[in-house]
Length: 424
Image (cartoon, rainbow, N blue to C red; front, side):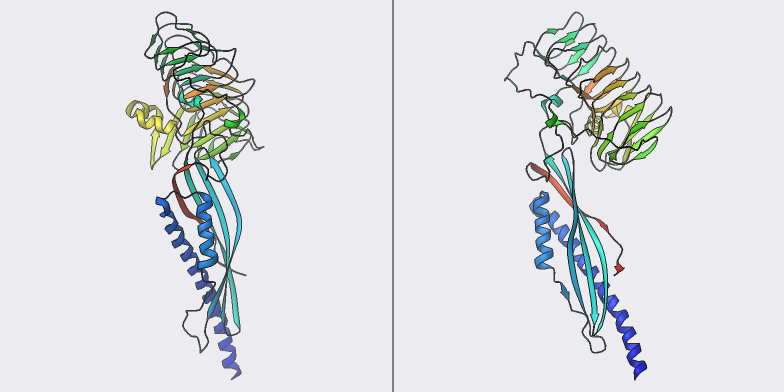
């Protein structure tokens, strides 16, 4: 009889483990089903607060903490008792994209008669929303200067596709320039000779409809911050870094959408390659110091399962090139130098007392420039094609916090991670 009891006890203990494991798997499955159900709520446009309120209510009120619909085991009724505790949560804002991540700790105790075993895991749920947010008016222009007392100087042989705004003067110092857009200035507009403006000219602040041009204040900026770790060639994830240094022929890949913070970017050597993975959202690059790119810069964008050479894409599909360039944002507190023979994508904001923009001959930019404190220096033989910001942080700042104040275009919840089940 004693041997029978021992065998039964060992068997019951092992069965209790399986019951505990079954309970935790059933709970995870139920949570996944509820997450998918909430993805269809309001046609996929739930804010973070609404989504997690509904999910938490389901977990607390509808998930049965006692599972006892197991077959009898040696005349005993097995059961699993489930406990769910909310753990850490985090909100990440990147332009019009906001992601809230929340982790739940789950434990399950399986019991048969006097035998008990407990297992545990954690499940992390991500809820992303895309918000309809209005950017700063500066980013409606291909060239924008917010500074009173300084002006935009345009040299010779430039092609500008988009409108220009200056809080002071706009002066064409050379000839053979073409502007496909309007020019607005609070001061004078000196078109000079031999230049073509295929648009309207509005000097002395005489603007139609009296548009309100807000100053480029800190409200519209991402925070300037950086880390201590310098980076070189290879892959980089969103985060805070020291100086990014690239030597001749080297490449760097920004591996996913998010905010990248640097002290400086020194890529003054030639034949450098930049790769942007835009599949998960826009890439925002914030530099508290200077940015310097050398000649023959190569740009690649990965999006929707395809890799695009931006040089070639601009020639073949300008609309797609604009869309991808609109997902890249540069915010620079120091100087920005771009050497000759480069294509360059993105919206660029230079904001700071010492900032300077230098564009060398032969550059082709798809995006736009905004500056708040210094002259946009004379430039020659430059092509600039306006690409409106598309989901980037341009003129949006850090975002509202939980993503419920703005109009929500879409939302998507996923199970980001389930930790391995372990006995405790």
